Image (tube, rainbow, N blue to C red; front, top):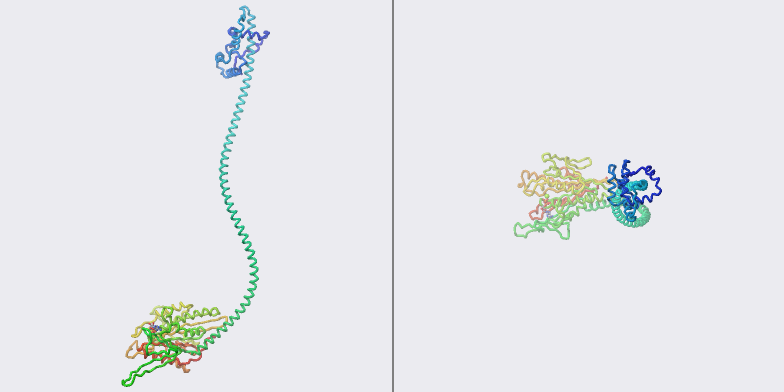
Length: 625
Ligand code: ADP
Ligand code: MG
């Protein structure tokens, strides 16, 4: 509501009713506003209403801006603001000039001669007043209208404002939402980048995989082709396998036939081998002459160059009287073989190896070395450590194990048992004993019902290979008693007997062979003068002489086919009984020392050996069941 001082319309209308034409009155009023106003004020004083002219400048339509300002001013002030100040301030601004004033100025300038009411013209004055009032009323009306319009406009503006505000808040919330969307977009962007990178990665991987796939496909193709080729090959092979199986069947038959033939051949070989050995003599004597210490050979020993079977000992005897020429006496001996000083260990063993084969074939074999001390018995039997110098024992052992291995392929199974014994002063000593010296057991030679000779408390060591046997030989050498004589150590005063029992079983053919290989290094055969030997030495000498001469006697008895063979007369012959009987093959080496001062001993040895060589031991038969 406008706070402008508005007069009651009723009262105003009542007073204006009588005015026929408002326009001329208005014109009149405009001509002299100043003169009118105080009069109005004076007139209105009694009504207690604020004088309109003084409170408010007349509102004029022409200036919209001015109206606005006036409206704004009219709306704005608070209740407490005095109305006069409003009017004056409006007037001071000069934006809105009181229409009456301007009109008055205009009228005054134009009319020049406006008529003033006469003091007595009260009616006219009232009429003027009424015109004025009417003008004011219409002005008020238009102001009210304007005011109303302004109010509407203000309300509209306010509505517009609130609409704009709500729009702004709406936009703000939209903006907020958009900010969220922006953040989301950024996140999405970064995610997109990550995904892009991942994609790139995956693409490169894909590329690699693709390459791999292509190569694998190629490989697969190749494999498929190979597979089909293999299938064809397989089919072909299956056909040939069937053929081969048939062939195998027929070959198996052939093999079993050939095995039979082989076995028959093996048995035939054994028979023929034995025949040859028998023709060579079941007892063979080989003579071996040791080289001189400085090399060469003594004059007194002569070996026929074209013949390897004879040896001659020549002795030049000086004439006792000195008148006649010196006489030379030759002692000729012939043996199965005579080996000179150059003969190698290998040559010596070649002959022996035939007998080793006989031992594997199931025949008892005995090999011993006879001769004076220093003549080369131990060298012949054992030899030295290095390969070419190995003697009969290690070579025989090697041959046996190698041959056994071959025979195992033909179904033979072998069991070997070794023993090593020393006979010293007619007592037995176990060379494989490893216990305390104080607890050495006593030994006795026993003969079983099956004529098998065994020694009580002796170590019979089962062996499966060459090395084990060589180990036992080394142990025996350690154990060998050593008591000094003035010629040599105790080992030369005792017989050492190495025995290898061979048991061969061919279960498939139901054949079992038992045999013994006996390798003996005899004590020195030298004879000492009784004056040189006393006490222990005398006892030793007697024992050695006894056993060696008994060996000769036994061989002679066997040769003469005597009913009684005195095996029991010495431990040596008793122990070698199985190897010296009709069922055995014997090889004797007679070792000769070439030195002139050994002439006598050499002669004795050769005589003993030729006595043995003359013996024909009864035909041997293999210990076969
Ligand atoms: P024995 O056992 O008969 O007492 P050895 O075998 O101990 O005699 O030989 C005596 C020495 O002669 C040893 O040094 C041995 O090496 C050597 N000897 C023996 N026979 C031969 C030979 N055929 N060739 C080379 N040296 C030998
Ligand atoms: Mg010796």
